[in-house]
Amino acid sequence: MYAIIVGGGKVGLNLTRELLGKGQEVTLIEQLRPRYLAIEEELEHVVQYGDATELWVLERAGIQRADLVIAVTGDDEDNILICQIAREKYLVERIIARVNNPRNRRYFELLGVEPAVSATDLILRLIEHEVPEYGLVHLLDLPGEQLEIIELEVGAGSPAAGSSVAAIAMPEGSLLISVLREDGGFVPRGDTLIEAGDQVMICLDPGLESRVTPLFNGSR
Image 1 (cartoon, helix red, strand yellow):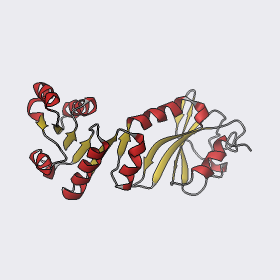
Image 2 (image 1 turned 180 degrees about the vertical axis):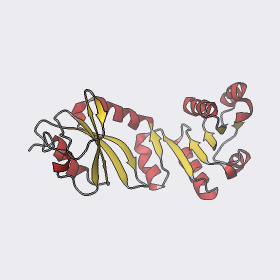
Image 3 (image 1 turned 90 degrees about the vertical axis):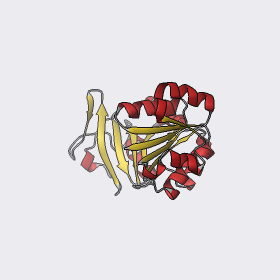
Image 4 (image 1 turned 30 degrees about the horizontal axis):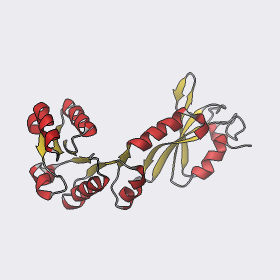
């Protein structure tokens, strides 16, 4: 795999180190000269100097043969533009963009720049996972595949508590794929009894959350 990473901050530099350590071919592009020079002392020819919103900089880095472009600069507009150029002009199949301000995520989505990764959103999901009062945790959204994966805690008064998996009236387009208890996690069978306090992971079609959630944390 040949990857181009744009942005030599902590995220971009650490990504570059990790990918190089896994034996991948990587070029890191940084437009701030002092930072570029500091990185060059460590990575030498792996890092290039320039503004990756300019086509000649991307072409010099070999974007024509890139398998993956990752834009992790501190500017959301630049990250969107770089990924759009990579996908639409150079037909790069895989792009990943960093979202610095979560309020800008909708612009990434509107322009089809996916996946877009927000550190703030990731931390919020961890908080949701650690604080049961949140009730539902979005673990993964796959808009291209039209799938979501959510995690729910089974409430003591819910329809699912004390019922077998087969007896839970799950809507079509949803599937209970794992159960986590104090003694560990497992993939349930149809005759598996769901207990209050279980953490269940569910794969579902988008838009089914409102029908699935009451089965596990709603009142009977």
